[in-house]
Image 1 (tube, helix red, strand yellow):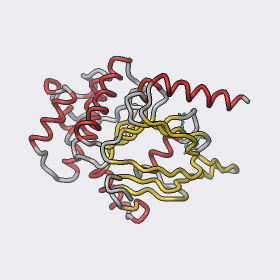
Image 2: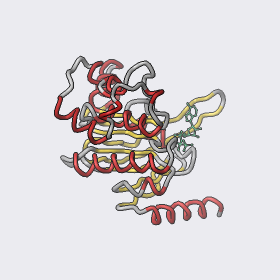
Image 3: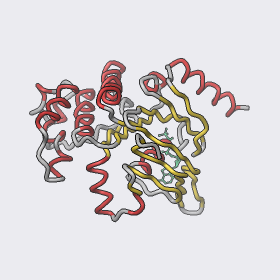
Image 4: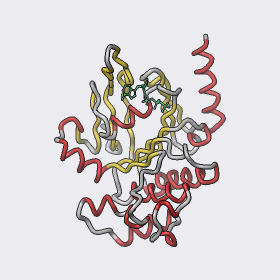
Length: 247
Ligand SMILES: Nc1ncnc2c1ncn2[C@@H]1O[C@H](COP(=O)(O)OP(=O)(O)OP(=O)(O)O)[C@@H](O)[C@H]1O
């Protein structure tokens, strides 16, 4: 394993046994994620994108293969160990923000540290809050913030513990294009300047254009990979998938 590798998926598979029929959501996906690399995961609806990143980040349990974060096999951990690893080594950003409504922006941002009984590092905390541009909103509760501001709080919360990897599942899905661009610019800056590893599920070729590479899934498999994507090159690749699908 390359020294810069911070997360590994090894033949990740997931079969849901629902009633009579089994659904194969993931059919053996392998990938490596290096420090400071911003990866977008794309593919048609139902191709397994969310299942893949959830299994990679220990939010879901694969039925075959394994996920390693910082060299630790998630399958070897107890439930308590997995909870601790998720809190300390993985940052999460979801489409629906998932902030706690009764806490202020500041309390939401430092929640992973509070839960781990750790004190915020003042220099790092200031750097994160300056980067997300929320210094004057820290006492507001989520309901008093716009969607874009709420997602910036969620990004700050994901970054605060300097995780090995940030997993973002359609982080711009609920935002207008301007707020979305702010979030994407922020994620890109974190990867380029802070060496933050990021994996982002998206449907949007413009969003994927901010990443360093794109992994394309179809029917639970990794079917292609693109380095240095642009919105046009991603759109073009997706059109070819569509053409293959109707043939
Ligand atoms: N809890 C579940 N029980 C049964 N089947 C599931 C479950 N979760 C997901 N699936 C199925 O697994 C497949 C992959 O789902 P997944 O949500 O990972 O796809 P996706 O690419 O993220 O889709 P979308 O872009 O629509 O969010 C789909 O066929 C879905 O119906």
